[in-house]
Image 1: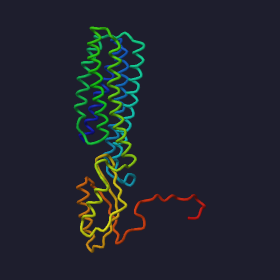
Image 2 (image 1 turned 180 degrees about the vertical axis):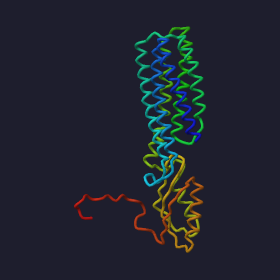
Image 3 (image 1 turned 135 degrees about the horizontal axis):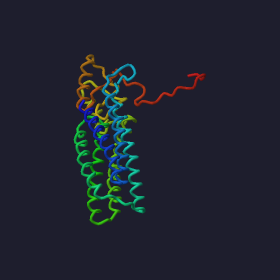
Length: 292
C-alpha cells in the first residue's frame, strides 16, 4: 500500500506541476520551461501507468497468473525506464542543438520557476524514496531527475542572468541527462535480467549446492533452477537424491537452508538414484505429421 500511495502522490504532484509549468512557459515566453513541461507531462503519464500496474501487481494468484500479478510491477518499471531513456536522449539532442543555435531566455522567469520546480519535485522525490519494487525505484529516479534538472536550471539561470552566457544552460542539461541515462541503463539491465529469468545476483548456485550436500543423507542435488519474479522474491526447483526413510525431514532441512539463501518458495523432487540427465535440455516438439 505504501508503494502505491507514494506513486500516486508523485503522479498528482507531477501532473499538476506540468500543467502549471505549461502555462508558465507561455507567460514567461521561455522555450526551456515550455519544453520541460512536455517532459514533465510525459513523466506524469508514465507514473500514472506505473500506479495502475503497481496496484494490479498486488492481486493474488489465480488460474491465469499462478504466481500472482507481481510481475506487472516489473512491467511498470520497464515502461517508466524506457520513457525516461527516450526523454534523456531528447534532452541531450535539444541541448546540443541549442549550443549551435542559442535562443533568448527570460532569466527572471526561469529563476522563479526553477525555485518552485526544485521544491515540488523534492517533495515528490521524498515521497517516493521508500518502497519495495523496481517500479517504485524507477518512479523515484524520475523524481530525482527532475530535482537535479531544476537545480541545474536554477544555477544556470542565476549565472546567465549575470553573464548572459547562454551555452551554460545546454552544457549543464547534457550533464544531468547523461547521469540519468546511465542510471536508467542500469535499471533496464535489472528489469531485463528478471524477464530473462537470470539467477538472482545475490545467489551463488555452486555455493548453494555445496551447502545442500552438507545435509545428512543428501547424496546429490542437480537440476537446480533459481529465479526471481520481482527482484525481491526468489524461487527454486531442484532434484534431490537421497535414500533416507524420512524424506520429509530432509526436505524440511533443505528448505531451511534455502531460506538462509533468501529463497522463499521451492519445489523439491526427490529420487533414490540420479536421473539420466544432470542438466535440463529443452525438448523441441516436432512438426505435426512427423513421427516422434
